[in-house]
Image 1 (cartoon, rainbow, N blue to C red):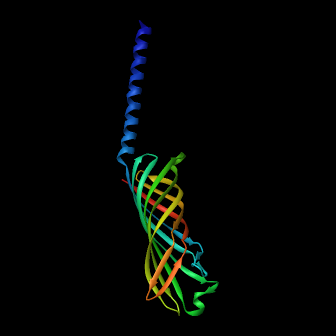
Image 2 (cartoon, one colour; image 1 turned 180 degrees about the vertical axis):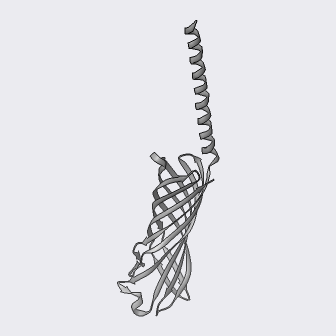
Image 3 (cartoon, rainbow, N blue to C red; image 1 turned 135 degrees about the vertical axis):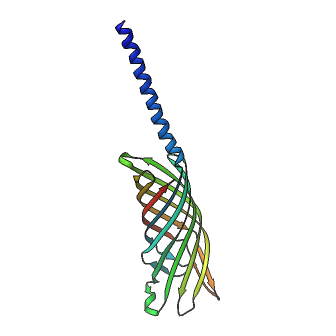
Length: 216
């Protein structure tokens, strides 16, 4: 009789434990399902590599800055799609090895990326996540070039793509901070104003960023 009672009590304990575990899993899944959208921003230095002028010299740039905003949707806990927009600014240092400042010239390039990205996330321990992804779209490249031979204030639109990676940390339930690396590549550029033209090869920009992400 005692063994029968013990058996029934054991079954009861197992049933309660199963129900509790199932409830925990259900609650965890509901949080993951409910928190699909996120909004993020990042900021950091931008390193625009040397740009080749077609059939002419090279343009070397100073370190600039990049800032982005993104709005994403998590299709699964590990895969998301997002839209990204931002601005990258760099000023030119030299053209053909000659400093622009030596003859009163200046060149500022503003790149405005408009991209669609995919993001893959790998959960790590203690609230950390590793991320990698890529995207494609367009870049509006706004050129402000002043020189003794003539000025160019014009915008060029070209295809662009990027790759990125990073590490984030979940500070709170709906808030993450992180660091990342981005590489943005554009196709060739053409700017023109009043008969003065500038044609260059594609631009490649590296960025190291700090990010903030709100999940909702």
